[in-house]
Structure formats: C-alpha cells, structure tokens
Image 1 (cartoon, rainbow, N blue to C red):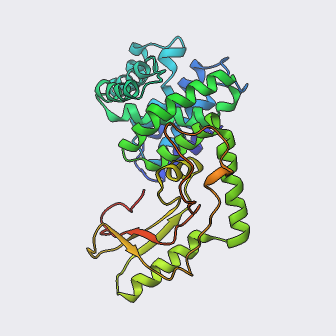
Image 2 (cartoon, rainbow, N blue to C red):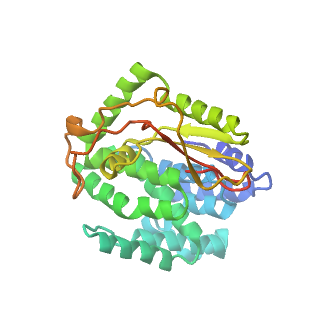
Length: 325
C-alpha cells in the first residue's frame, strides 16, 4: 500500500501547491474508519481507497477528488456520517463522497443494452459534479484489477456491469485508455479462451516479425517526411478485447497515429509499399474458439494483429490532444 507521504508526492508532481495536511488528515481518518475491515483477498480494506486515489493522481485531479477517493467508502461501510465528513473535511468533499455512495448503491446488473444505456444516463444525471463519476470509474478500475479474489459468479456479474456501463462511460468522458483497460479486464473474465488465443498469436507474431508497431510508425514517419509534413508519430498495440471487437467489425487490429501542426485532414491513408507492411494473418478464423459476440461471423478474411496492408493515420494541430488517446 502506498503510504501517505508517497501519495502526497504523487499529487505534488503536478500540483506543487497541494494541501498536504488535508490529504494526511483524510488518509489517517480513512485508515481509522476502515480498521479491522479486509478485502476478499485478505488485504486490509484501506488498501483499496489508497489505490483509487493513486489512479486519480495519474489523471492529475485536485485535492478534493484525491481526498474523496480516500474516503469514498466511509459513509457506506463504516460508522462515519455525512455530517462528520463535512465537519472534518468541508462541504465540497462531503458532497463528493455522498455522490459516490449514491452511485455505489444503484442496482446496476443488466442484460439489456437499453437498460445499460439508461444506467449510464442516470449516472450522468445523478452527478452534479463529474468528479463523482471519475472517482467511481477509478473505484471500478481497481476492483476489476483485483477481481480474481471474488467468487466466480460475482466476477461474471461485475465484468458484465463493467462492459455494459463503466467502460462505455469512461469512453464517453474521453478516457479511452481506461475504457480499453476496463473492457480487457472484463473480457478476461467473460471470454478467457478467446483472449488467450489472441495473446498467443501476439507472442508468435512478435517472435516472427519483431516490433511491428515500431516498423509501421517508422514507415509513416518516412512518408510524412517525403511530403514535408512535420509530425509526431506514435503507435501502440491494441488490447486483446479491442482486437476481438475489430476482428468482428473487419477493421484494423492495431493502429498508428500522427499529429502535426499542418492541416492535412483528420484522416489519411498512407499507401506505402505493400511489401514493407506486415500482413500478420492468423488471428481470425478458427483460432478464436471462445463464445462469439452476438451476430458475429468468423468467415471474413483474416486481419492483422497489428496492421493491415495499409496504415491509417490522423493529423492534428499540436494544440489538440493526440489521435486515439
């Protein structure tokens, strides 16, 4: 578990004026309130609020949000009250903690996509402050990272909730990295056979072709330089679930993007030499033996794990966010 001084250091990395005393008091109070409580894994329960707070430091959130993370289960699971939290930490923090508690108490289990959509709308409507949703998303992310300590039927329930409600919500709030991780953690529970098949294929391709993403980004960079476009080029491998989804929608299973100061359109297709691009077949077809998504067919042509025979890139002004993040 991260100790309080390390947590404060994480916050001060992006907010040198952070109220360290407020964080120390919240840390001590949360530890006191959760004393004697343990997670299913056997760890002290307070390790969870601290982990949620650490996740939120990665998003560079303010002191009130970090403190809320440390206290987010106190009103629900301990003898703490709204009035006490308000007296000790102020109305802003008390309102945020109360908001997270209300979202936690929603009965979210759903098998219907329309019902899941209604829950996402309810989340937004109930949250007067979007920081409440950010804390709740970080809470769910840590719970999914540690889901193996739950009973199998509980894992499936939480994974479905996450796939239907929390992951799309993270995407709508612009946190694609969180959406992808939530989806992949859910995929690991709901369809482990398919996920393992994709990972095995990844390992095989890495041995055969090396770092394909690096090769693709190098090709894009070279083509941009030829036409004198100044750009920062980056690439990343897709998560297993993202590959699974794209296989069934017949899109590329990996992507590379570029951002630059010139306006050359939002999307461009670079037709570099087909011989230089990797056609890493084998992810499609019968290699995926797990249950298929509703309506999915596996009779389409195989697609690449990391690239198809053409690359798609984005070009953006440096003042905007990078493509695909």
